[in-house]
Image 1 (tube, rainbow, N blue to C red):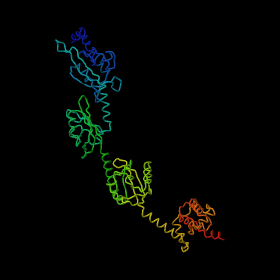
Image 2: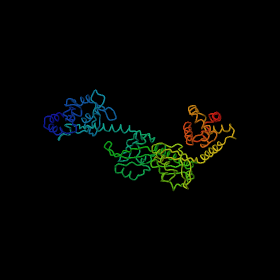
Image 3: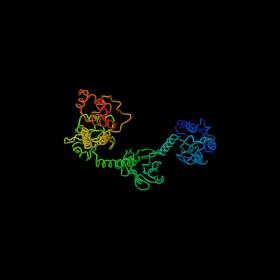
Length: 500
């Protein structure tokens, strides 16, 4: 052995060998069978953070003291399992991966992938030199660590299967939480044991892409759950390499919340539709923009005479529903300005040419994702007719009050007008002449009779009446008389004083 050592050191073989391996990207350490470190190329020195062979160590024991090794599972490498020990012992190995820590430090600096090589003399079986070949795979494993951390921390459910046998090799917490499976249960199954493509809308395409190892586009599928049943998901596949093996990364989006929301929305819209059709109030639904009708209920047809086929797809103005053009323009302008209607009084024309007085209300809402407008029409024709008849009856009675008792007149006056508001107009706001005119109005006299009684022209009386209306806030004679009687003024004493 000593002669081999002397021969190798003294001949040109070592120099030639050093020249050959000096420029290699891989690190190479030459070790004498007596465990002395003979030489290392620049790549090997750099992979240990040193610049000279002496800093690697004089021999194998010195190397162990300077550098501590751990396996990737964080287990310390025993002294006799160091790759440099094993190669000297004659072991042949390849792709041993270790983490290298400088003595005195806590965290590893590098990750080395190591293999062995033994050089024998031509004439002897005993090795003349053993070689440690090192690759720095730190960047690769750092990238894998980052991927591992990102994969596990990603809240989006994901699994990775190996393409060679379609078995799952990685699964993240998001997938386990969504399905309820245990990690070991998933990692012992294939893609079709836990079928990630069940009921996929393009299952045949997905299977073909999986066999080819190419991208699987997004598609809806159903994913089995640990406790039975399944849930609706969107699944997609992306080919990746993991530990130098071709794999497929499956990612999932849980559609169950969306499905439940859509189901709830559908039920809500169905209830709205039933309520809309059964409502006793005439109602219509139109587009928010353009006011084109898309639905009417039976009460609308009963009120207006328009069937759905005659009005849907047209606006209310186009149909001629409004009794006057100004009415339609006023309503549409208010809606376009973003002002909803609440009990807006308007006249509408029926299909047969009739006239109906209505209170119109609108409400903006969303239906099937579209901005819509709900119209409601309350028929007040009969109510207005009744009010008009009552007013006319009161006016007729008050034209001759001589036989009507004062108490009944006062009750009618209170029905017609509210109790006096201290903040409103009072009798003191009227001039003496206006009080005289008001007194004659209370006695039921018309403008001509008042003019004769006061000895003035009819125009003068009309001017006085207009000023009285403006001051007390009324617009007809019966209302003025009711206002006066509500304040205890009938004008008889005033007229008596005037005649005296």
